[in-house]
Image (cartoon, rainbow, N blue to C red; front, side):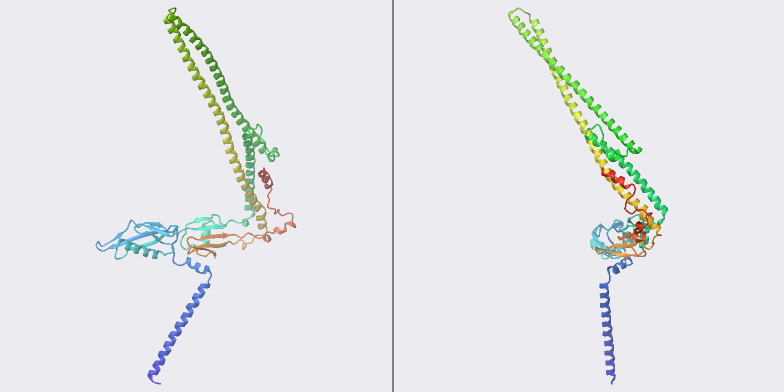
Length: 473
């Protein structure tokens, strides 16, 4: 074979190898793309915690803008822009001279470049100024579920699930921490139930008294649940106090109304007296007018003097003036009677309004107290029945291992991600912590039918029947 044929064969061999390599690379790229398509969402999400950080709402960034001015051989600082900015709920930043600029989903480097270009276009520079963007404060993360202090917390780079749960106080202290703790919890719950029961009795008695006041009844109709417990010193004291309060308030109200009614009676008598005086004055005026007419006739005939006529005219004018004063006094007395009637109505209305308001507040407190008693009774049952059985069985640490779930938002979509203690947390994550409840078979509850010494599992405590009875009233 000639040298040209050999060289041509070599070129064909290299060309074939080159195309073969390209084909292999294409096949590998296609396989990788297909693999990425079938990966679960968690695979892509797990990279978010270690990849370059992207901004989101509630992130606070610190902007630094500097410009090299060769004419002055100095670095100029843009103090008006060099401050901190917060990414708003729509994922944008509001910056002077630029306006709003999208920031969510961008890295600090990309955002710095875009701000620089915006400033260059806005100010007409040849080159953009030097921009530095750094995260001053990350958006918070959240911890919820079975932790001591669920809520919102400040993020720090490199935060793991275990560290985040530790910041939230750690998992809730379960029932397997020892019988002593359970006994303390049970004692506290029984004490709370007793306090709630006493307050419930006082509220029921107060409600009965307020109802009697609204009905203007002399006697209080206490609920049967309270009357049956009058042998209890505390209940008897409550009933006696409410009766004393009712009697005192009723006596005070009656005295106020009686005083106003006595004043009204006095004013009515005064009106009658003034009316009688006016009648007497009218008769005197009529008599004076008749006598004055006779004197005028005699004066005209020359049988009487003008001085006598003048004296009678002055006496008539005085009588008329006295009558006007009596009419004025009569009007004032009637006005006072109207004021007294209004005062009585206002007194009754004020008493009714105050009693209604207090009764409504008492009923609301009764409803709230009933819910608290129910919750405390359930907690007492858990402390006295469920948890002791768990302790008696020795507990299962593996059953109470926390289950961690991260709720993460990516590109506007929210999804859940199974996590472990070492999973990295990103800002905005919500970490859900769940402590699985022990199974009934683990607690030995099914043995109660065979072992009568075990506590009952009917979800009741000794205090609950009485609380339910009180609430039914």
